[in-house]
Image 1 (cartoon, rainbow, N blue to C red):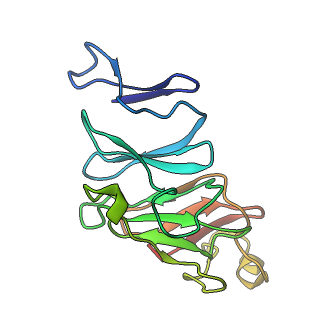
Image 2 (tube, rainbow, N blue to C red; image 1 turned 90 degrees about the horizontal axis):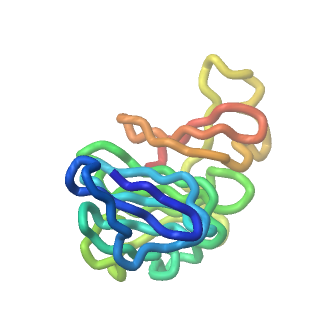
Amino acid sequence: LLIPIAGVGVYETTDGGVSFSLTSGTPTSTFFNGQMDYNGVYYVNVGGSLWRYSGPAGTWANLTSQSGAQITNVDAFAVDPTSAGHGKVYVPWGSDNWHGFQSTNADTSNPASVTWVGETGGTLVGGPTAPSYDVPWLNYASTGGGSASTMQCDKNGRVWWAGNQGFWYNSVI
């Protein structure tokens, strides 16, 4: 169990909540949208950067500063929670969520070896779709999707988010 406290850091228990301790190297800025993958690796937006905690009694790494990709101003992101998708992370970029970066090894033991593919100046990484129960015209909107306030990845690897005008999904991850 991890408990983030803005301005202080992230506390962890490894004994079922009997005791908590501040994680070593913990970021202390504002925490937003924390998600955990199948192997217990924790990802969180800390002040606009994507950080990773490697698991129980683990270490912290700023993935945006080590990515090689130009990932900046992280808002929402999605982590694949399935065992087959461990290490898969999708980070949207720009004002819509069909441009972005994805990593298939974000949980690798060496943060410097995390690789990202995707947005390099115009490449689409899939396209958003409005679910059948949403307003049908959303599938024909020119920009589609809008900015996400939160994103989640389902058991099928589909990324879901609430955009400016509706509810969307993308199967890129």
